[in-house]
Length: 402
Ligand SMILES: Nc1ncnc2c1ncn2[C@@H]1O[C@H](COP(=O)(O)OP(=O)(O)OP(=O)(O)O)[C@@H](O)[C@H]1O
Ligand SMILES: [Mg+2]
Image 1 (cartoon, rainbow, N blue to C red):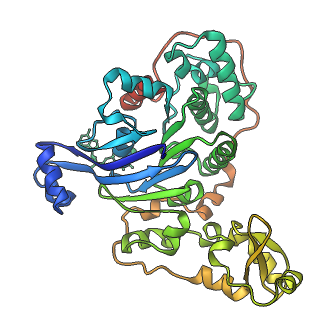
Image 2: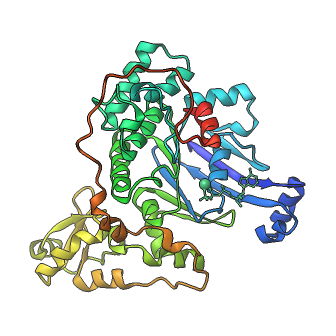
Image 3: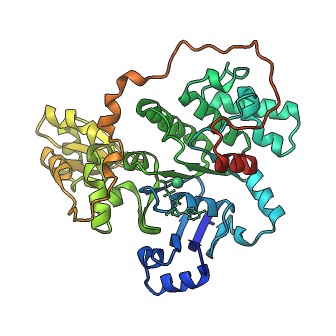
């Protein structure tokens, strides 16, 4: 069974939302409704997320990502459609049932960390457990373990403002992990971080995911982040999901000109893998292996093949998980895969250039996390439940969720 299933979800803000859904069902779009003062934030969104998957929702500002996410955790009621969590329809749960699901099964990680400034790192990490009524000793134990997983061992007694942005976000992640929730919802969780730290967090999430195998819905407007993290990526435009697929699907087979124009700047060498571009083996397997500069796994990114292909004319051998030879990559094959331009059309997304590319991220080499910060242990905790960024929406969600 899928962990999460969205079925024909609509969210319309404004007057007569049900009428608006009927019009959208018969082909009207956002602009048609906007002139009447109605916003179709999400239109007919359907997808499934399997256990252990990272499902990324990607789209420009205003495309409906956060609205979609808020319907997944029941903070917003869909105008039409339903959300199934482990097969259970959460759109029709009682308020109490929904609170139960939210506090135990779903955790959120926010863009602006939403930490409580007068609570220690440990207390922040244990906040979700506190909401669940877990005893102090158990929540300290679980929060300590979650902080350790997030690389914050030794910082338990510090205050949030003594931590760098990346570290604060790791506390946010630890808070979500401490609850043992199956489903993590992450809305632009790394967007407020400097590019290098952001990349570090992406690595850490992927590393944690190898052992924790959570089901994650991750929202971003950054295509490179989407491609690094997503097992599946849903691309949204004007409230609709216009394509769902793996990063390779999207890169190799963009569904339309809009998606094609989006992916123009993606570094194909980091997304495409050996398995996706290899040619059939040319000759006897033993001979191909013997001549090859190396044998690589199918999921090796092309960027790692450059040096190998430069050393000899013989193709690189590609083997599957069982070690069987399944293909080869010649220099020509490698170049052709990288040179293949998608048929980018006219519908260039307005903010495409805002998404930092991997190259741009690398430019910010000076932004590494400070090494010299040390935990300070001389301050007393003060009870206070005001998240630092003061964003009302997030505060409400932290309280509903954390
Ligand atoms: N409570 C609301 N009332 C009215 N309109 C809303 C409301 N929430 C969102 N919208 C509208 O719905 C559309 C989608 O908004 P949403 O916040 O989901 O987009 P987003 O993709 O998350 O954007 P961003 O990347 O800027 O966070 C926007 O046009 C927004 O103005
Ligand atoms: Mg948003």
